[in-house]
Image (spheres, rainbow, N blue to C red):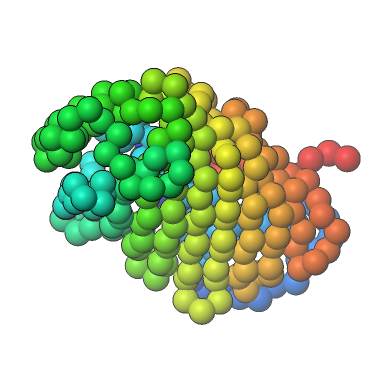
Length: 267
C-alpha cells in the first residue's frame, strides 16, 4: 500500500512534469496512442491532482486504520455511541491544519448502524486512546459488517483542489477486510473535475502488500478534453485503462500505480 504522503508527492510531481496544472491551456490532441496517453495523464491529473492515486491512497489510509497496518496520523475528533459513528481529521503535511475531515460509521450487513463488539466501551476506549487497538476489535466483528466512511477536504499542497468521497469496507470472516465500494470526486477551479466510482473491489490481499482487484469507472474533464472509461486492477502494481477521450474510439493503456505512468498497449 502507498502511504498517503507518497501519493501527495506523486501528484505534485505529475503536476510539475505536465500531468495537469493550473496554467493548462486548451490543446487538440493528436490521434496517436502516445499523444492520447499524455492527454489522459493530464486529465487524470485534474489540473494538479492525481485522482486515481488520491482515491486509492485515501482508501489505503482507511485499510491501514481498520486492518492493523502502519497506523495513519488520524486524529479522532468525536464519537457517538448511539449512531455507532466517529469523526476524524487527517493532517497530511504536519502543519497543524486538517487537510481531510471525515466520519466513519459501523453498520450491520443490512446497512443499519450497529456496535458490532461484545463490549462497546472497548471500542470507545480504542477511539479515545491507542488506535492500534481498533484493528484488534475489528477482528471480532461479525462477517458482513460494513464500515462506511465519508470524507472531504483539500489535499496538502493543492489549495485550489477540493475532494470528497466515500468508502465502505465490507468485512469477511474474523474481521478480515474483504471488499470496498465507493466514490471519489475532485474539482479544481471551474474547468477541471473528475469522478471515480467502484463496487465490490476486492481488497483481501492489500494487507499482505497486494493491490485491489476489480474495476473502477473513471470520468474526467479538463482544458485538455473529456475522458470516460474504466480502470481494471488485477492485484499487481499495473492497471489496465480502457478509455475514450472526447468521444473518440476507446483505446487501452497500462497505468503504473506506483509511478502514475501511462503507456499505450501495443495492438
